[in-house]
Length: 451
Image (cartoon, rainbow, N blue to C red; front, side, top):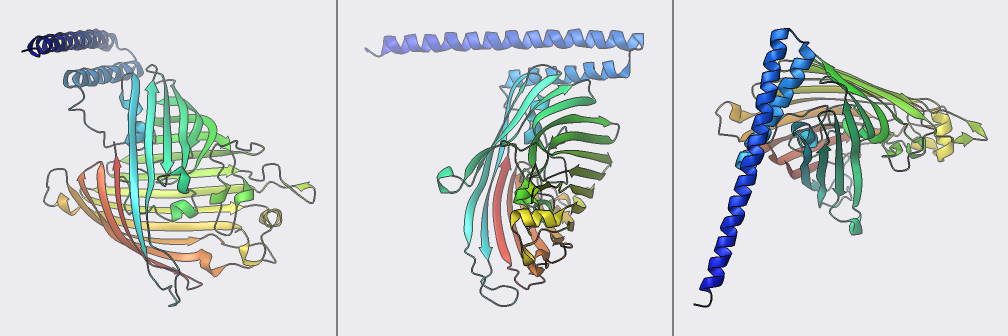
């Protein structure tokens, strides 16, 4: 009996709190509805007066955002659907901040990978490789929309599960966007360099394969980010981005390519800046685009007291076609490096360890969702095959030799199973061959998610 009175008091308190929360939510919803009504009236007035299309488009966008916020407030977010398309050049989870009316947005992704290596190389020698399983990365996206024009977006990356065992924590990107209008904006901060398919769209449910295409890690050094600023926008079917960023640092260049020259925004040397631009045209299921990067990479280094530039020029051409369950993709990338001999001398690279005067690679890929033939809700089952060719020493300075292992081919075949568009299970097998006959095949299993 002694518990009855306290329980009654607790029950009454909970009821009052619930009623207060319900009233507050209803009041918030009513206020949002009033804003929508006012905007709709303004939209009707502007349409009758023949106002500019740009002003009308902005009002329609604001009405859509408020309507979505009203629905979320009514349901507590329980019915909010994960957007399946990216925005402003970013993948779905990375671009969530663009879909909120104001305030905080949170997203993320993660992936784990098991790699099982062949015990023999291409030439039947022991490979010496040890199988491993790794929680590659866990990502948290945090954004804040201050207003219709200004927002901040960021990505924090936790790699390899533990900083105590070789992992690290990094800021993958963190930038401010200011929209001059619905079609053009300014972006500044730590930026993803807009090249290739994967550098900006690397959430695991977005790409096929347990591992990212090697062309887009060896020739295009994804994931590649750098401090800088620039413009982004769209015009009809065309999307574009153009940035000025700190250049690469040639002190990290090797025979394996320029990947080691990424400064990642961490006290980046800025003696040499670079310019990068990208444009993508899409219509229906077809997308075609290109990117171009140019900039010095010596970052103030000298050889025998003489400065050099080590200008790197890089471009890629890419295309994709989607029709029902079919996806076809192709990408070609090439870079050229000036002053390669000076880079070798500065880095102490001799013989076959030379940097390449050019790096080149391409891949073609085909995938088909078999459940598109007999739909099973949101499930998808997508076999794919990808062929890659990479050469990170396409020419070396006089007095140096090319390492035959840097000229390689890679075939990947596998499938991805998605119970939902945001979750994927992957399995594939990779056949590696190179001119040195030291390639090692491997089986890969992975899980990935985004939210």
